[in-house]
Amino acid sequence: MPNKRTTEAEAVAELRDGMTIGIGGWGSRRKPMSIVREILRSPLKDLTVVTYGGPDAGLLCKYGKVKRLVYGFVSLDSIPLEPHFRAARQAGGFEARELDEGMLQWGLYAASLNLPFLPTRAGLGSDVMKINPNLKLVESPYEDGEKLVAMPAIELDAAFIHMNRADARGNGQYLGPDFYFDELYCMAAKRRFMTCEKIIETSDFLKEGSLHTLRINRTMIDGVIEAPGGAHFTECPPDYGRDEKFQSAYAATAKDPEAWDQFKADYLDVSEADYQKKVNER
Amino acid sequence: MSDATRAEVCAVAVAEAFRGDGEILVSCFGTTPAVGARLARMTFEPDILMTDGVCSLLGNVDPVSGDKPEAVVEGWTPFRFIFDHLWNGRRHVMMFASQIDRYGNQNFACIGDHAAPKAQLLGMRGAPGNTISHKTSYWVSNHGPNVFVDKVDVVSGVGYDRARELGPQTSRFHNIHRVISNLGVFDFETEDNRMRLRSIHPGVTVDEIVEKTGFELVIPDDVPESASPTSEQLDLIRNAIDPKGFANKEVRV
Image (cartoon, rainbow over all chains, first blue to last red; front, side, top):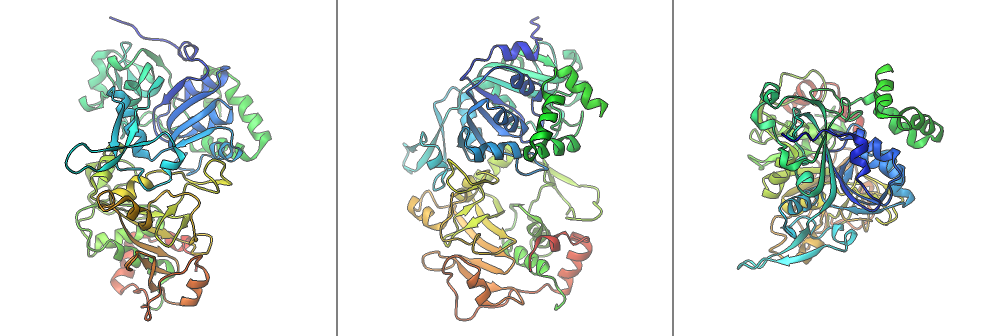
């Protein structure tokens, strides 16, 4: 039986400058933040980051890791605009490939099915077509002859997702209300890593949740990382909600360089173990 | 009712925007739209579907403020299903607009050139897909010439001129229904789908609206006053939907 257990450091060590990475979750919800923090500590640069963005996008932009961001939005949910992302956008430090939310799904889905594109009406008539000059149209070969956007596959070098539970073989389980787009990121990627709150025995999955919560199967995953609190400060229900107090403090650092230096020293220039310790000591 | 607040008049106008929608999903950005949609559902549009803002379709109506009753869940709507649902078309969304032009092109993505924005706003979100797939209305809580503009900086939501350029086949689901602001109600029921003043809220003048709009509106000879809430509607808004009056904090008079 394959044991795919690994660490954030080993997973991130596989990445190279200029790679395209996908980050699962949605906004400030069930983000693989322990991986994001590992990338922040690494010398990696010039990444193309694909995300329904939250603090993952904000932090990676703030650190100058991002050459190109492919996204539908970047939000902290309870704080509608991600302030570090906003500052980075206004400073013009990276290429913003902004898509309609549904188009982003379509690009990941096309890649996950090994298709060059999937057709959609979304984007037509809007400035999404201007912002993304690579987008082309396709004409229906059937009688209707309708012209649609050929949303190109978004192929990923690596994907990172965070689940509530996983086993060492790479099966994953979400226990919150939404599965988001996590398995599409994995199926669109060459290398796939899943952090989780807790690694359990395969035989215990159905004690945790219904059959329908087993969204990730082991063909989709190369590495499993046990990371309790790994999604902090984003929400990971039912294990924990969003740490609103911490998130507010993080957001406030966007307008206060001294507060940012302190936040960085306290929480980002430290190991994941020390991060979790400091969070719990507050 | 003479003692209705501006926000309550706006909520009634929002409810009217959903009249006739029947059994479709209604999604709202903003407090006043949330109040108005609930008002529609509790009175003349009992079949509309609404979520709890997360992943559940609610079989009962949850108030915008005050004590929440226990949720009756009638369905599950993870984001994946919402995307399918909106492309399917059985939905009416009321989004806000940071900028909107005479043809209903809407921007809430950024101010300035998208490549180098002066101010990053919400982003494209679902606006391009929403507007090309199903009925869309807009809510503006602070009507002014910086919102009602001659030309939007970035087109997030598609307006009628651009829909027309796409041709009748591609634009067959496009339908910008109403724009509701703190000053009046607007529609596009004109020959070339230019924005028309449909009604003005009590206490507002046509001159004020003209002054605060950055383009030339179509203004009929007789502009009716927006409906004030009936006593039944006021009772529902104040006692069942928004007992703490959150909408009153959103709307400028």
